Image (cartoon, rainbow over all chains, first blue to last red; front, side, top):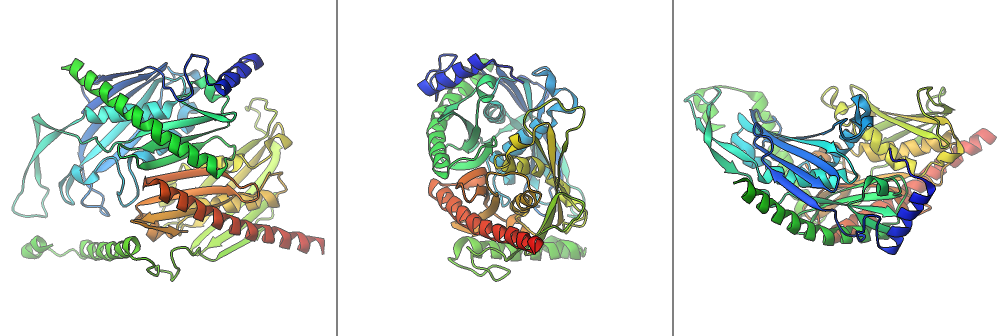
Length: 285
Length: 261
């Protein structure tokens, strides 16, 4: 909950209309981004991402599981988001449930692609070990440690970093003679396969305040929004997910304009994030 | 399967599943590549299912509506405006409380409808921009949607049906909200998909639209889309939404003339 006086609200709205925001940023400028990898040793991959005062920890864990009967040639990926009460007291107990579901559904929509698997960020068929028998179950958890707006973009960035940090153990399958028996799986402790994250998209949320839209809104700015559109864009500039928040209706032409602005901004953001990832990987070594 | 034959095991379920999958894959290929392959129910790609809508199926509610699009059957009741729960903080605008539930027999596998737990919040987001919340301060309007049978495009039908129920309850709105979804298969766009089509789609797009104000209240998209395709799909949806809006308006007029007679 953000408590703002009339004067403060007017100041924020006026600043956005004039193209200079309360923290000195321009409308399409992100806050300072800091990236750390490998923060959780017991996970297969992890990352901490800070975007201004918003802080996210993402972890990726791989476990052996059984593929779905309907998709015997694919592994499984599940995404969960947890909003910790350390970030905001209203997140305590069931208070964060609605927000957590909203965020995890939005992330699933952006990362997992269509039902047929087309356009998915994570190639599910690369997670299969023995068709119909053994596959990797990938659990992606996002934790909101500190919240100052733009949670979805920060979560998506953190997940992208965590996935690029993820090593899936190499497995040796000893196929027994009878194919209906459970195959023996030997998980290697030393050899890891790097995950291909080139098609993992970033999410850019454009928040509409008054007549203009801004990226990377703080929670004060978010409290003044009429609506927001989150667009997820991959490296090829293809849109692979879109969610609208906020009740106010939008003119279709405004939405199309927002999509093209988001696409433009996302390419810069991807490049920026990539350089941060390689810097963080170099620092960790 | 050849290995299985060698060891002499026999599992009809797996084989049947495989055959079904092959058949679906073939259907998917046709939907993705052909210009106008007739769909399972005989529609062409840009045909919606025939819509049947009616107001007032439940008498206890302030307003209610029933919608039937092909196999999908939805009933929505609206209660209120009534006093907000005591625990709620004071609010000078009204609250809209939306809840979507599935009957246990709505899906082919019992109880599968519980997977769609985000539908309640999506219904709320689609409607809140259209309802004049300031006309009922301190009170709550409850919108309860029940899916009797899930046959594809559930959420858009719930949204359209809920806005009809809200209008039937006499809740002040800026406009009706209608919603239509499309599925994307390869280069083709298919409107108003059935659940079979939804299960194999490459991407989907749901638009909730206010036909008279020409504003989009909710838009969600999954899968990979190019710019041109998004524009086409959204325009297709908006066109269908406008036509659905006319149907909703006719239903409301029918009810009004019946009660005045």
